Image (cartoon, rainbow, N blue to C red; front, side, top):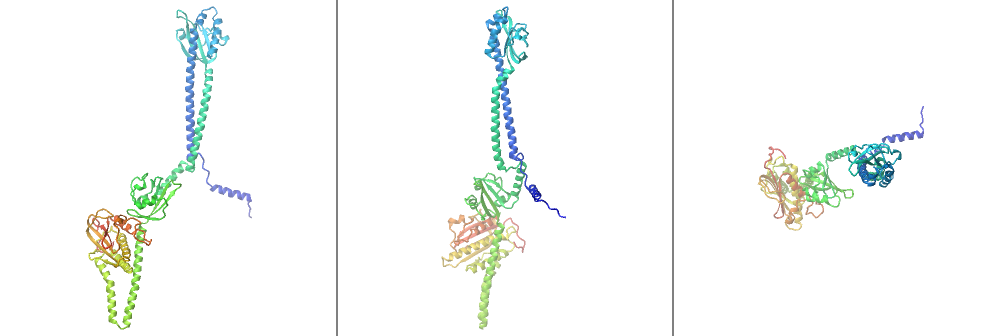
Length: 576
């Protein structure tokens, strides 16, 4: 038996499910801005209240002091008045003193003025029914000729009063005068300043509250209403993410100073120490890389070289000019593999060309045999075989290092395919096992392969303007010492691997020698040169502690020296 649910009930259940998955609204007090707002309001209120209480206490104290001075002055004036001194000795002092004293009381604004005999019996009082009664309070010091004040509760309530003696001509105390202000009248005097003080305090609290609210509203927008714990967790996630990613990340401010540089960026750029606040132009980076980072336009997947690495650079602006984000990807291994792939592709093309030529020669030999010219067929075949084997024998005999030998044979075939003769000098010789394990085969391919490729291109370009046939000469040998370079430090004494490539091209302009090994420098006019070849050569040489030298003979001469001293040799028969 099925039970159908009403549509309204289904809608209510669906709404309830959606509410369970919606994030709960963040409480104002939970957010950092809300907590700061509450703290600031409490502080402002406490400061305003404390200031108001302190001001009230100071005002009350000053008002009471003023009241004491006032009643003291009034009591002295009355006690020193000649008519009062004469009236106290008259038969009916009250009749003479009461009108006068009341007039003085009204004029001076005090609460009461009482004239009494030395026993404390009143002759005057604001309340006529109190006349003739004993005064309340202390009169001992007045009988002793002193004037003192006190706060005492009398017939009019608590009051600040002063009792002073009345002296006759013989300076004897013949009467006492007491003048005072009730605390109620003093409080009435404080009501005006107190109301003003309360108004100022309320206004200050309101202004402080509004200012605090506005400041915290802005803070709430910037912190997206998150609380301290959420901000702390976000910072930890942020730091963990930045330092765990393999891509380099550098953040720059408006003045192109480093704000953040993660571990990958430090490794890719070879940076150490504290980088925060340092201008990017002062980090010792290559000029081309710095120019790309500081350029007006964003950079997309641009290849640059550092001291030891090939990196892919991307830049973008943060917001409306707040700074710049720089990302770096390591392209070193990929660039090396790409170079090796180009070499293999060149070898393949060369082998294809040789196979094509061999097929043509084989057809020629077969045709001569079919024509019955056997001797001519033998002479043609042996001559072609001698030409093909001559360079191979020369390379294998001089260079026993298999990587260099294979590279030279492949490049020779490529050069021959392009109409360039590649020769190996007579003094070239590298025995197997001479090179240390620290000198990688990949770096050898990078150095010698790029030098030969650039030399072949230069020789072909030079042949277009000269009757001299294009030629590239390679020298590869172990040398006894190094020399100064245009690209690196002075060479040091000791054995080193010397790789020299000379061409018959136009050579390198002496004014351009300083720029030859910079990324982007190229003499190619077809737009296909990226200017990375010689830059990679210089980088590989630096990485192995070597140097690069630019010279000139018939054309350009580039010499690379890679030191071998201090490095362990390979075992006999090992391949680097």
